[in-house]
Length: 259
Image 1 (tube, helix red, strand yellow):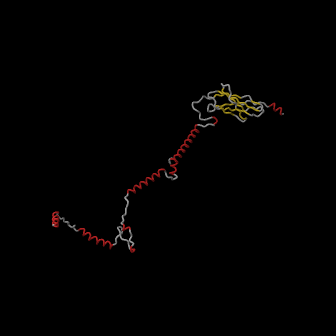
Image 2: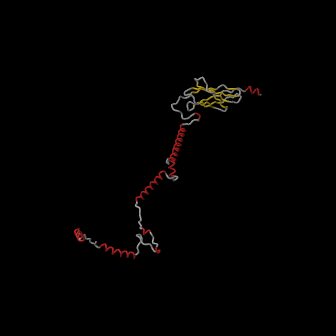
Image 3: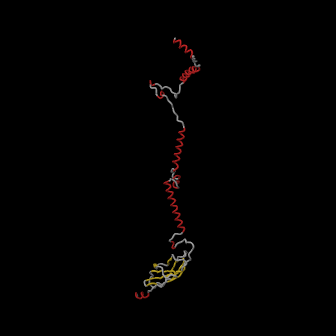
């Protein structure tokens, strides 16, 4: 029986191929359908391709037995390609299945999507640029907050956290300076006291003598009024007349005294 099984096993039949051009225009997806494995499990699928007008094949691709398609990217625009796929089992390789397909003409604009979804589209690039721009703004705002005490963070700190702004100190200094200037404009109040007023009367432990600021009692007021009336009367008297002696009389008196 083992000998009969070995004689019955052979190379697998070539897979049936289907090719489809992707939306990029220069990307090709090749599907295959498994055929008779020849009595031995398929081990690998071998894929080769080249431009039809070229003689050299691209590097062979070896795919596992469970594979059902391959994606060929980076193909030349407006070029016809030949693709070969072989199935391989323990007994050997099958006859290659072949297919021909042509890529699209080169577009005027760069396509948005990239092969296999491994690249970034226009939306993703724009999103990354926006994030970088926002991070740059945050870095500049933080720098302004610590160096110049301004920016969005400083506004939040003042309005939300109640922190004093950079202009508060300057405003306080201006108000203090204005108040100081206003106080200087007023004339100082000076209280003049004589030596007697500053020296307390210690003799006999009596009361201190009244000064200009001490209020007078009713008897003291009467005494002061009595003293002031004679003084006013004397002040009203006419001044005494002063007569001068002529010079001749003075000389005569001098001669007589000499005689």
